[in-house]
Length: 73
Image (cartoon, rainbow, N blue to C red; front, side, top):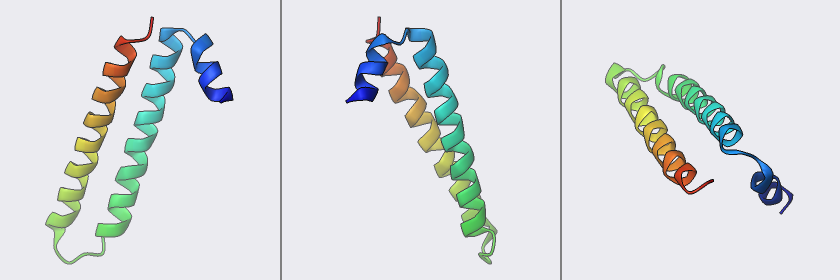
């Protein structure tokens, strides 16, 4: 509940910066997890597919954040 009240008092620039920083950190975490899981796999294509999935998740996350930020005044 405190976080929701805190977000009500933030301006749009602050929300943009925090959400962008958070989404980039999520992308970095996804890349690290993908590399650690698929690096020992004998098929090198699996790691490449994992990186593509990580990028798709990042793009969807950024798109969702952008759509939600349009509603913020």
